[in-house]
Image: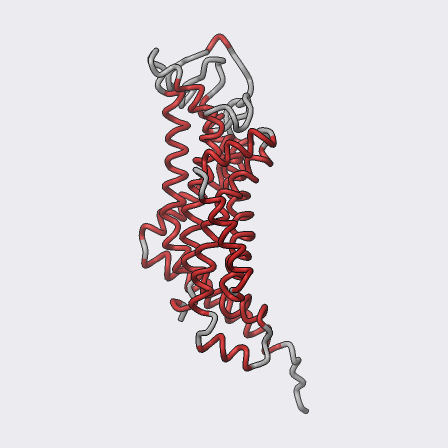
Length: 299
């Protein structure tokens, strides 16, 4: 009796094999690079704080209690209390979700728009390349933080507008990297072979060329995640970011700075440390992400 084999079986087996190889490659990258292991562990901690922080903090981050205002760090209040008696530890942990959401959303938006603009300009060239280049030069002509300030001041200091402003000032980085990487690969042998196989230009660009341009863009993504958090915190510090009493690291640093002279150092120190650790984590993560997505390093 002849056994019938489903035509989908080889494809399913191939997909399973590819997933297994990708997982093995990720494990190899993490094992071979201790800095990447530390960065991914720190990212895991930040994600847990963002997802579960509001559920596990010991105090309501918005609840005021004048009787315990400006208390230094203690066993009852690990990071002390602020001028309104709010628990600083609870506010720092809860603020992780908002800052991470702003950063990830802004970088994702700028990556999609910038990589599309740069890839199309680098592949097709001509007037599209000229227009894209002039647009990017126009954005880069402004001091980027000042441009973000102007956008938020014009549109209003809501979370959505902070995300849009942060995304706009980051678009040129991805557009330039994508254009350069695609431009040097558009006439490479594998791209020519893909065209000769009957693939149209958009498929050659999306399937064959763009994946090879991703490794340097992963490094840019990790850097921009840190810059986006700093940008959001900077806008909040000067009063153009998230409005109080919403827990946000930049607001907390701004509010705590005025108490440093009088000795309440913990108000600015702990949100500042959280901000520094988040930026450091994203910066360290770049090399690991580059190695994971680089097709040349997969075996």
